[in-house]
Image (cartoon, rainbow, N blue to C red; front, side):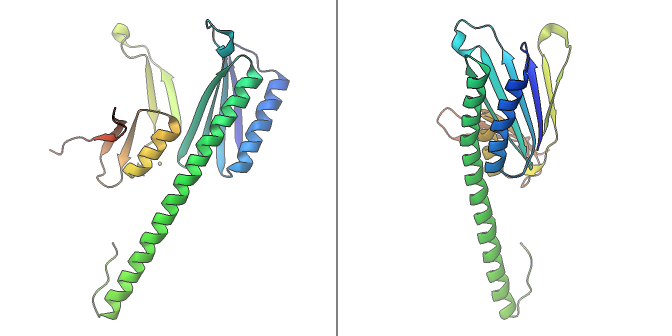
Length: 201
């Protein structure tokens, strides 16, 4: 696992770095396969001293991004809090990965049984996820202040919904593997999802 630690408006001391490394190594043991981890610790002026330190961690696991952010009064507490939040993210990720694998194996087993039945009857058998890069841009009228560029791997709507939950976003843009269209999945006010796709010409 490649670990990158950055500070914004604060200095990353050796003690802080050691604490971050210790927490991330614990997480790495819980979730093997993390290729890259980015930790950003920032100091922000707030009314309350209890949330002036912001800790954000982004993990790259295969084609999935897990991200958590927490605030606290000091760096140690913020790191502890964000590590706890990541534990919850990892549990959801493992649960989703397990369900997806079970579904894939069940579907493959069903296809094999169907193929065997067709073959037995003499019929012909036919077979039936980024890193993010953020760049600051200078645009006229001050309307667009940040551009995000990312590679799109084809994924299903269910996979896009899981990725959106992992990131804690209310919408997610992806390449739909079924329709081969760039789509936007968003969270509705009633707790369900909406899907926006371009209309075919």
